Length: 84
Image 1: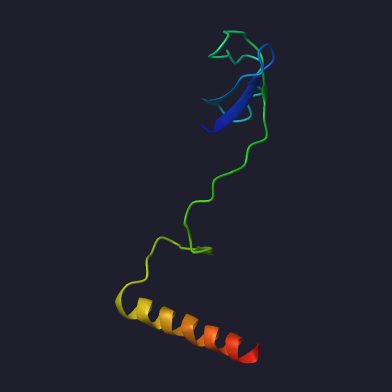
Image 2 (image 1 turned 45 degrees about the horizontal axis):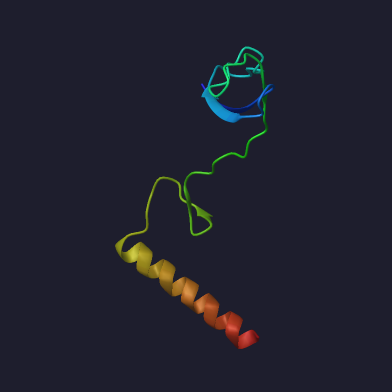
């Protein structure tokens, strides 16, 4: 079940609820004022697994892999400064 953001139609309070997929919010009760009826908001999604702007697919660089990666990034950085 996803977490959706809702906005109360009565008091405009924004709240989150863990609800079944594609719930519209008409039956949601506002935790602040108790009014039944809310509007589902469009939310930004969370991107998990990003490391330094790159997608990590369940593994981390260690040992030789990390050293090789660092040397590659340093050499590409040197090329960029020489060409500038």
